[in-house]
Image 1 (cartoon, rainbow, N blue to C red):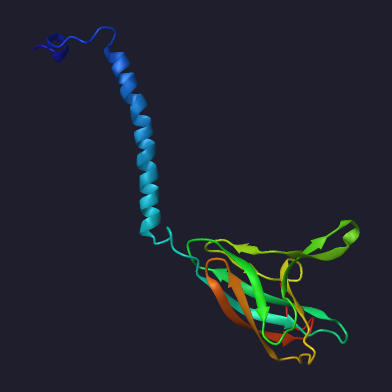
Image 2 (image 1 turned 90 degrees about the horizontal axis):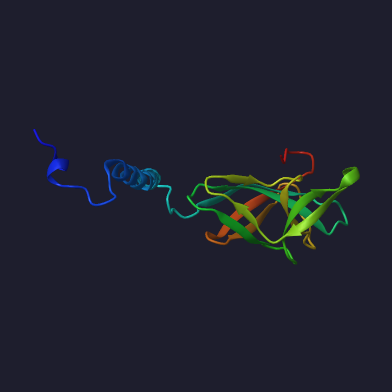
Length: 180
C-alpha cells in the first residue's frame, strides 16, 4: 500500500509538522468564535438580548416636613426587569412649586453627613434601586398648603429610555416606617 505522500510530493520547505502546526493555529480562533457564537445564541434564546428597559416604580414615601422647613425627602423603589440599563434623569411632582432634585447622601470625616445634588442615577438591567436616607433620594420643596400624614403626592419619574413613569408617594411621619 502506498501513501498519498509518496504520490504527491510536499512543496519545497513544507513538511507535515509545519502543516499540522498551521492547522492548529487556525483551529484556536475558530473554536473561540464558535464558543462566543454559542454564548450569544443562548443569550438571544433566553430573550434577554436587546430587550428594552422595563422600569417600574413602587413603594413611594415622602416624609412629612417639620413646620417651617422648606423641603423634605421622598423615596421610591425602582426596578428594571428589561435587558438594558436605564437612567433616571428628571423628577416632577404635582402641586409642588419648585424643582424636585435627585440627591445622594455623603459622609465626611468625623461622621458629618451632607446631601449632594446629582444629575441622574442608573438602574442596571435586571436590577433595582431602593432610595433611602443613606443613599439616593429625592429632595422635594414643600408646597405652601403643606401636607398631612396619609396624603398622596403624584410624581412623574422620567427615564432616558423608558420615558415618563407616574407613581404615587404617601406622606408618612419620619420614623414611622423603615426607609432602608
